[in-house]
Image (cartoon, rainbow over all chains, first blue to last red):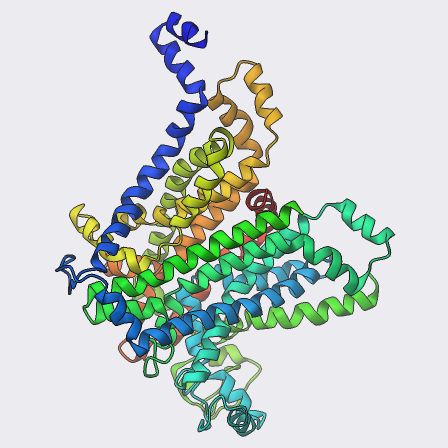
Length: 324
Length: 287
């Protein structure tokens, strides 16, 4: 019957009718975004996958087929293993700091207190600064010669104590005063982790606050009546309800940290002796600086399936946690 | 709140604020330092010192604005700021143009496969730029956009569109279907219902998408660094490390000033929209 009505109408009417039908309208509205992404992501992505199976070098963007050679070469390279390990360390360690920090800070930031606006402004700052620039700022804070940390430690006469402590806990065995924050492998790992945590924390705090805001007032009232207070309430009421949103915050944190290039590139360039390389910087070092495009593409491609797994898993759990 | 709760609040909030904001405070101090004061490792980095490292209460007489002047007069900094803003604004516009209809259609019209497709679109965001930029740079050369801001305006939506589509899809789902049905019964077309009913209520969600897309653009580094090579066409993220770090020479005071200048207005802006942003995010991602 619907078809008859459409046929009876003049042509523009038929068009309008078509626009009312979900089957026509939905693809029509989705198509521009999908076509755009197919061109600027799909085709380059497919090309990069193809490159990873060739011995392309320099700026040529094509080469002879070499099968999985690039992948096996990358995998057997000690530097690649370290880059993979570092990517995992930076991502997991910084996100652990971020989750704990955001859970605590968001808990207090929703309260009303004098100067709240200013505190919120200070908290948001690391998120507002472009990551390249804020990393340059950290480069200055951790400078080998002019480090404010070293100056302060020296004035407090704590610098030698810290060096002995680092040796005692086996972090840096033969560090010397003044400490080279970015010039020693393990110290640099810690420094990069802290910078990542520092720049993601504001974002996570904001999302945690959003998670709190989504808890219905009735829950608050009910838990009050039931006498749940303090830690008990936090553990049994607030945290479970915030879980879905916390998972999303962690998901974004993981993605932002794992695909980041600027922080390591600017702070250490992957050094000293490739000890702080991550997958993105190592891919750049091999593919661009070293000219082995194919292997560079292969290195970059290790990250993608990992991120897809994490994302699909987290979105799945977030949905599940939501329902219960 | 009791005084005790207040005490706890400050005891937690203040250390966090110091940790997060200290680098900025330090940048603020350093950007006005004279070269001699900066270069002497014995001098306190927290204060402005005279030549012997002494502090005076009229400290502004021992500070200088020459590095700020240098930044604006001897480098293309003002141009970079403008470029960054132009790219951000253009990308936000393109993003909304593509993501609003797609997000709406996925949430409302697509039915069962909408959710899966939304997640699939989000996965596009995960393709690392280090992988894409080589083939993309070929595309940019073919289109004759090399060395032009247009290359960034074309490429940046590749990560803002998937993100924004996913965010907006979630947000549109929270809007009661009845509102739309009422408009449809009253004789409005679907597009008109979208335009007149859905868009106005979705403002927090759309604002969230705008802020997100803009901040992703400002933060982007690899494309900005590789696609644009002439200094006047760069964005802040690429121009500053390129022109203010020359070999081993860092123009520290100017670098730190260059960091603070965009960070402060952006932080004020984010702070002002924070409550809406929170509303947009809660509405969006989780329902």
